[in-house]
Length: 174
Image (cartoon, rainbow, N blue to C red; front, side):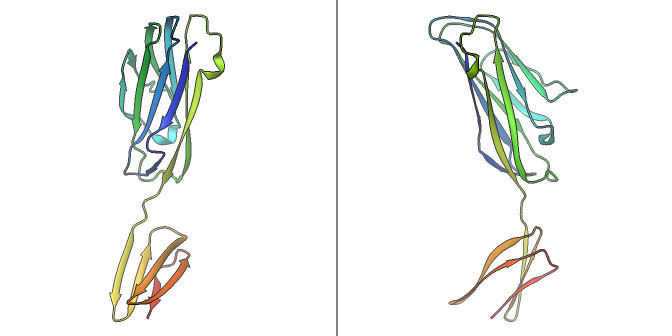
């Protein structure tokens, strides 16, 4: 019985900054070998092309015309496990949201339980929020690049909490 477990590490990344990395573990049966083992990873096309692929066994080659990445692992001995790590760098223009990545393992050997042969992992992509803060006299101007934005203005011991929609400028006065 082959099993597959997939995780996103870390589960949240910043578009245009962090790599979205997926770790796939293929866990072999302790008693029986598995023949002709293939892992097929299907990623969201929005994440772009892979920038790093490693496997503890076999080879992985992205298909340029599809969103699939087959990893040919070959034969697994009884109790043998394989780890595949795939990284993508989401572009800076990628929309914020949750992206689901699917992986599935197949074998030509009998597999009594195929319900554990596929798994998904989700990665949350967030957008980088850049602020420009300017202080003139007792006025602090904050120019957000995204909306809605929450922030706190603190001047000595007085505090204001505000939620702003995207506007050219937001002000905290003291």
